[in-house]
Image (cartoon, rainbow, N blue to C red; front, side, top):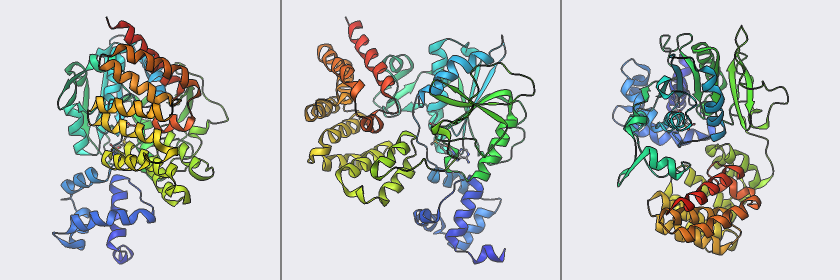
Length: 464
Ligand SMILES: C[S@@+](CC[C@H](N)C(=O)[O-])C[C@H]1O[C@@H](n2cnc3c(N)ncnc32)[C@H](O)[C@@H]1O
């Protein structure tokens, strides 16, 4: 107690945040929280505020802090290889006539992940959608309200093919509204993963839990506690999906690691043999899941070292490391910074950085592309198309700029132009630079982008 009181108010605030929300901050990040502490404590003083946070009357304040402190980055059809295995193997293996399949998305943010599952279930028809029960939970009340409202920006739909957009969303001047048939299939609940809630986590409550890109920010002991709770709440032989850069190594012995194509996931060990849907992975453990949670992948020299972090969507870490590199001031470093702004949804900053990079020979094509993405986000598809065309002029081998230009030309009804651009994209994609795929591929690999290009080209021929 005496020790706690002798620590600075900021240190005590940070300890309370970790204890209540699980969010861990390294000492070098503490300064980022100081303005928030000043703001929130202005009316009652630091000591009064810290006492409030410790008291039973603090519920509303913790909800407000959850809104300010959590990182909600998400989008539809994220980590497609995992969704593919979920749809094609895991859910069909769990289906029994008339029995529900219960799926929990823990840390669902604004709802894109649970809705993606409902959408794919309808699209692929391997499981009866009426059997599927999807529940999304998140500690951030604003995210849950957004999820229930089901209105999304083009940025959230950046990985959704055109045909699916048209089938499942209604476009209006305010954004894309998910159609009620899907919206009503998913339930949402505000819930803190750290809170003891024995009834919610009762044994065998769920067949599948997705907790992707949530525990990256938690210390290992918090992760251990939450995983133990999830393990108990899964049916024996139930499945757990973590984000591609998260792992249970050193966290839990309750699960076996499975692999299917490019996806890694876990199955709760069952006393009796469970239905096999994929081969358990023996050593060596794949590189993407080797490192313990929060431990960065092995570093390479210079800016290249940031690429694995970008691939794993660990943007905050990439940002911190970029700042520490001497190359950060070079055009390529500035380009990385601009892409990090983009991925965090800070479009004004990304646009500003993109404008500055236009005049530099090494980054001109990428800068045009980046500005095109910003324009797409703001709904200006014609402007974006011009930018992608400019990117292709600056570097004619830039496959992704042909791909985006072709996609937008088709959407605008200019099928002839779309065909030329898409054919160009398909011929160039096999050689597209890995750096560009990482920076601008939207999480699709080379193969995924080829599929997107082929689908777009096919859609051109379908237009009368
Ligand atoms: C980066 S988003 C991941 C969204 C989604 N799972 C995905 O992969 O696209 C992380 C989410 O975890 C939520 N979160 C963080 N701490 C949490 C906690 N203690 N309890 C419940 N949700 C939490 C955040 O509010 C945020 O919406």
